Image 1: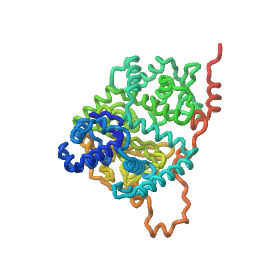
Image 2: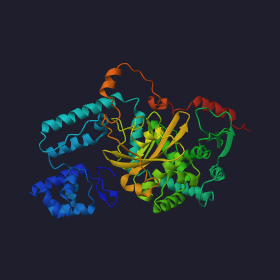
Image 3: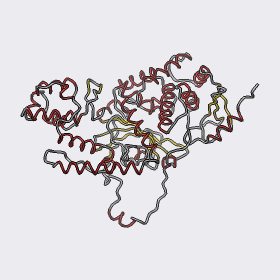
Image 4: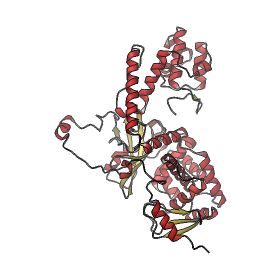
Length: 490
């Protein structure tokens, strides 16, 4: 749920909460009604009405009707898209700016927009914000295209609670077509899927080093490595190879297309390995017994921990009613992947991009690296400016180093999870730089200008916009490989 939508039960109406709030206030003042009087008329606390007028609370339809009746107007009057007057429009613009990624990235405390603040001051704040945003975009225009695409895709995922019914249906149809009746999906079942789609599997020792698999669409072949990674599920490369064909993906025209296709492919792969019907049944039972566990989900379907966590984010909100956030963080502290719909405040740049930014040292995704026991799940509560969040996290190994994979929920939903009794607790004040990003005065004075560190973060995160149709893949090498392995023409 965002801060710019009115809800009917759980469905957004699309009205802007800031504009709605200012219209409520304007009608109330026009009626010479006090905040307390309106609150009494709708049987709510004055603080709740104040939150609505300030655009910080999203009224449901029944509450909106009550407000309209008390003010002698219609619901349509309240939901009109225009600000009630020029001053209100200026206040709304400043509020939007202060809630946006530029202010968050700069770490500037928002100004309280009250009637005592002169118009000139609000215009100055807005003009400065617009100029800073322009400079950020100008500076990031070329190398940050990938980060901008990430931010846009994440917004789409958040709007759908990371649940894609069309992909779930494709997975269910294919599973049914090969006779899968429930439980973990075997390697043979995966091979049967490939065969049904017209692909034969070929294991080779000379797969291009930049690839996990290569699909020969002309001859209906999927090439896979003979040596399997101990940390990677051997079924996943097969599923990912034919998923793109099943989804009808064309060659990506830009990085945004590439990223969207990768997300869809990974989603479908997880939906095939953890079928929705079986996974929801498993998780519903775990919720009823208040023992949801990523480790249990992993073990029940014989998948990797990261795949289990990803799949949980698909189903948690849409099917279990649990808001959630997910992070994959490199040991350097850099966010590799992230998703949230529970209002946790991920660090971001001025474009709203999260990947490549450092996560707070007090968050579970960082503190788990200091835990001696790498075999048991680690749980922690973290008190943040947006509330208390509980997380479960585990360390995973990869060739680029160690990663933490974390799933978290707001405090109100921790009751459904195993590990809620943990005594581990931390406090995070980020994005306040005094929390963990700014060295002490004495330390900074001693070393400022005298240090020249080399980043440990994987270079793929620091690179500019990838080139080529498939970023990170050597097309010449792939074409040479296909030429060598193509069946002889009769």
